[in-house]
Amino acid sequence: MSGMAFTEKLAAAVTRNESLLCVGLDPELELFPSHLQREPATIVEFNRAIIEATQDLVCCYKPNIAFYQRYGAEGWAALRATISSVPPHIPVLLDAKSGDVGNTMRAYADAAFLELKADAVTLAPWYGHDAIRPFLAYRDRGVFLVCRTSNAGGADFQDALIEGEPLYLRVARRAVEWNRPHGHIGLVVGATGPAQARAVRAAAPELAFLVPGLGAQGADLEAAVGAALRSDGAGILAAASRSILYAGSGPDYAGAARAEAQRLRAALNLARAAGVHTR
Amino acid sequence: MSGMAFTEKLAAAVTRNESLLCVGLDPELELFPSHLQREPATIVEFNRAIIEATQDLVCCYKPNIAFYQRYGAEGWAALRATISSVPPHIPVLLDAKSGDVGNTMRAYADAAFLELKADAVTLAPWYGHDAIRPFLAYRDRGVFLVCRTSNAGGADFQDALIEGEPLYLRVARRAVEWNRPHGHIGLVVGATGPAQARAVRAAAPELAFLVPGLGAQGADLEAAVGAALRSDGAGILAAASRSILYAGSGPDYAGAARAEAQRLRAALNLARAAGVHTR
Image (cartoon, rainbow over all chains, first blue to last red; front, top):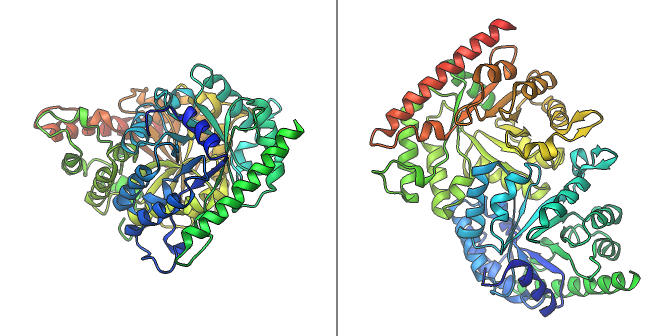
């Protein structure tokens, strides 16, 4: 977190690096290059190498808290060190999908914004507006509400019809309302199919979408980007993790990560140009 | 976590201590007794004093992860030390309300069950069945799915009507299905009003309910317990945190916590007896 507010910092990084790519920093020791020690102590070294190799290619970094918690206090220290290793002009989105009520959400907000110094977070929306308010109080940070996830079970509740419309669209509409005063809310919209992304974009024309699943999950990139794109040709953080982090397993893993990030960034930019063109 | 499976361990603690009381171990330094240092280093000392003073009065301890994350790696170490301070015959329910997809949920399950050695966890249900599966794979642990929360915003999505029934009841019905193979799923049912708890109990007659809000939130205890009680006269973990932890602010804070735990345990047992009686 540097002085700039999240929304401006993200826009500046998108422009500066000509990129919609958000790299997920999700360390999995069992996938680490074989010459590295597969121990929590190596996480920061690994992440720093990835950040150094990709920092001119991304608009955001997104560490998922689960992959650090797994290693306890040592993992938590690695998460903090990783976030502070990101250059100040690139925003850090902490993927924690936190959700609870009142007082507890204040503690989660302290953890994300004060202790870890993240620029933005992902949150579970289903606890309602009062639950996310402690996060919204930080007006210079961003909040991404989970709208639709790309897994099979995403349909179990998120697709349930309420007055003829799936629950995830109700989340999108509420997010639009809640975003009005200060404009720092976005949505998590998994790359399941272009039809869903198009429906969410219609319900939330101005909001930024974090779109996981465009890398390893191998959705049809052009269709997915075209459906989620905002009318200004941005509004997407296309998240990829494993496909970049573990692109190589040898000593030049950072070079392999860079090559894959370049490939995906270029593919995203092509899809973006095609999407803007067809509007 | 000792050798016994969560469900049996909970039932044994309910019987042994004649108690439905679950004490939430949520350290808030600003509420600590004034003679203690208000620093993360003091958390374990505080929690141990509370545990020592109440371990013959409770059926479960429930640390909420947010109140530890706020203090970073030091908080995480305190959480781990707190859990390992609980006597092995009392189960520990980690309140994390984790939710995400596939791979990430495996990392969360590792954090909760392997790193922290909790007996049970709370989870967000809205990612669907495949998301909770990595937790269900630990058959000796428990999983409590958030069904209805007691905050005002709980109504924003949880009460949305699907085919004439609120979303939270759909969560309860799915939990019943998912519970069938191994019987270690419960529900989080906030003490909002007896009508909701009664509807959830009707939908899920066999499941254990974690009921927050019976202590500090001051709901009508007898009505709330009566509505949530299982036909065997148990099936409730009545969670209270602040009202017990911060019952006293002087040097005998543990004694004050004990007195308040005794009062609440007795009130719960009276309500339980009345509830069994009226069935």
